[in-house]
Amino acid sequence: MTILRGNSGHMGIKVIIYDDDTDILLVTSVILQRKGYEVICREDCKTLQQDLQSFQPQVILMDNWMPDMSGVQAIQQIKSHEDFKHIPVIFFSANSNVEELAREAGADSLLKKPFDILALQQMIAELVP
Image 1 (cartoon, rainbow, N blue to C red):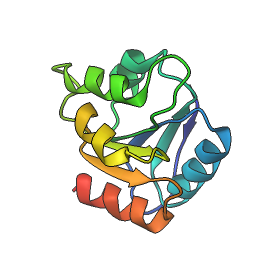
Image 2: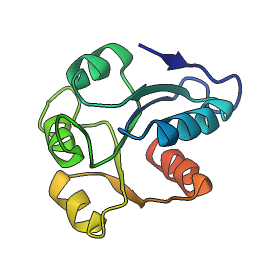
Image 3: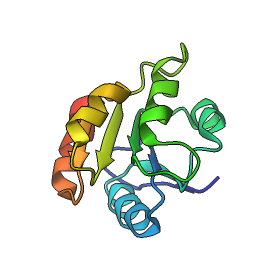
C-alpha cells in the first residue's frame, strides 16, 4: 500500500483515489499530498474492501472506467456496506453522462474530467469538515 503523507494543511485527512489512468493518479495525488492530505492510489478496485478497512479514508475519488468493475458498481458496493456508506465519494469521469452515472452510483459529489484542481480541493473541504 502506497501512502503519500502530506506535511501541512489538511493533516489527518485520508483520501483514496481509484483511477486506471496513472497520470491522473500521479498528478492528483501529488497535489493533494502537497496540501497535507494522506493519499492512497489504486489502478483498480480489486482491494476495495481491504483498502477501506485498513486505511479508513475520509474521502474517496472514483473514476468510472476501471479494469475490474466500473466506478458505478464500486460506489454502489461502498454505499451498501454498513461500515463504509458514510464515506463521501466523489465520482469523477470524462463520460458525457457523468451526472446520470453519479446519481445511479449514489455518489455524494461529481467532477467532470478534465477538472480544475482547485474545484477538487474545495469539494473535499466541503465534504470533510
